Image (cartoon, rainbow, N blue to C red; front, side, top):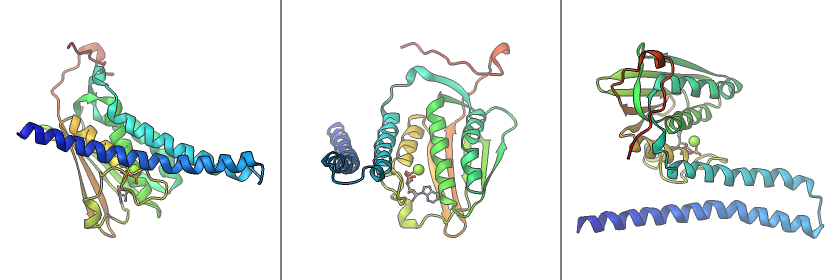
Length: 242
Ligand code: ADP
Ligand code: MG
């Protein structure tokens, strides 16, 4: 029975994910417990441990908040979103961090609105995750190109970095929960982003060339939308009935 098969596969994936989450959270918890024991035993100077404890706590915090992104029932936030604005907000948010790393963000926007029907916070999360990865990949600085275009009935967003690129065998692992090559990575950003894109009937693809850079291509279905006269400047949240 096909349905049964699909269900058991889902259970398998859920089990894998649960095991991964448990593991990833247990590690920092174990080390926190160790430090607390050291501190309460009064055997050593406590000061040096606080920084490590704080970073272990933030690790747990970021894992949990990224995972929450997946489970939030945000269907009531469905709206028509001009993805140019969402990207503009994202760029504003990450500009400081880019500047800090000598990275220039170069944007190119479609002249007319790029309407997508969806949950703005989630779409923004995808843009943040992909752009963050691009910034983190460019330790030497450089340029990141961000192009927001419409191609037939799709909105296509391309984020191109000048980082080291991604090897073939790495490409297939990306998006697997907890796959990371970074010391402080969670390995959840892409998994969450793929899931969000999928929920919006969209997709994310990566094209990479070693030594040249990587392009992440986010595709979402274009939604036909004509805003009413007075709300053309800022699209309103549209409540949906059930
Ligand atoms: P994290 O950023 O926490 O490591 P992600 O899911 O966001 O987790 O990314 C997973 C991995 O994919 C990264 O650790 C990195 O190895 C690789 N990756 C993602 N984006 C890029 C990029 N633009 N350039 C090079 N490698 C990338
Ligand atoms: Mg990331």
